[in-house]
Image 1 (cartoon, helix red, strand yellow):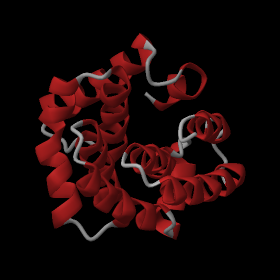
Image 2 (image 1 turned 135 degrees about the vertical axis):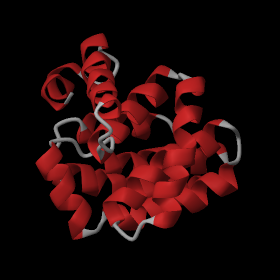
Image 3 (image 1 turned 120 degrees about the vertical axis):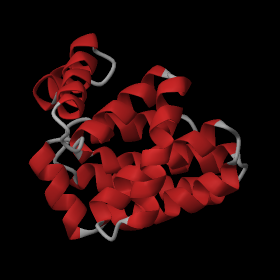
Length: 173
């Protein structure tokens, strides 16, 4: 999944096929589905607007967010939960979840994980927060967070971070 992810992006059918195959193989052999597979599939489902698929992941994400002590695991659970709340119009709940995710994004544990993985998916906690706050009519908080997102994206190793930020920049106006 991660090899075609960088040049092709989540919406590419080959990327989804690679992540889906990895998930199937794990399940067939009784192995735990890795955080990278869960994060990749959740991102694919969110970007494709596949509500049914993302809702099937929510119980696992809830367990990650509430039962783990590992920042990477918690953040992996929080992002789909917060994005789901956002798209359901539960903006206060979404912001509480995004705020927790943003704190974990800044941990050294997550930095190491993201660099090893080759994808800075945690930055979406900031991007969706900017959008969520703008939709909730908190323009000042949205713009403040956008400035923070810009600084983070400029420091990110992921070449997708800056275009993501520029897309967010066009939204809260």
